[in-house]
Length: 215
Ligand code: OGA
Ligand code: MN
Image 1 (cartoon, rainbow, N blue to C red):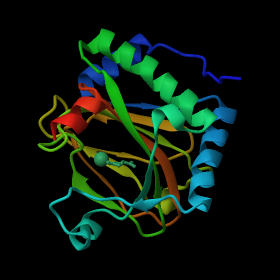
Image 2: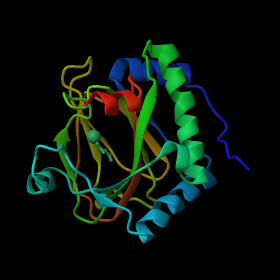
Image 3: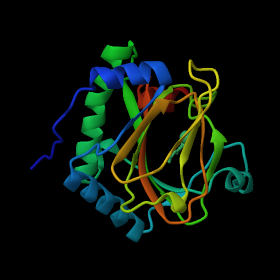
């Protein structure tokens, strides 16, 4: 049986929010059982030791990367992933179409990964869209941390300098919360004091195969 998640269009408030702030937070994003199963699929791969240290580009040494980023990741292959992850990817395809319609974007493809931040891990201030990744337009992070408390740290901090509302916003990685933001915004993950699970996706304005052929 092919799983699917009932799709909900953005509300007019959410559209206005994203238009004004360049980020949007949606709580209780997936049906409860879908979020649970997604976390189980992430943990399935962790048990199989499929997570690798996240990198920050080929030209920089691993040592440098560790100063910047301490998460562990596993890429998601859209056409051969576990069933609940596949349903989530399909949902994000529909969400891309909605974003295209409402914000005149031309999102065509996505890159996705599971991420684990072990205790003490962080990701220093960076952008997801930059010279070697110019096709990442929207970053989408789904947090899968049951019983996350403020004392556990691990907030995503988005710096909104240069947008209509200048400042910083701090987002706790609570269970089943979706954070969506323009990939060119500066952001960071504050050190966490408990293992932190998420699925990160980048919605892109170019097909992955084009990127891979071109470089
Ligand atoms: C990233 C990232 C944010 C988060 O993986 O590039 O910024 O809150 N993640 O996990
Ligand atoms: Mn990022």
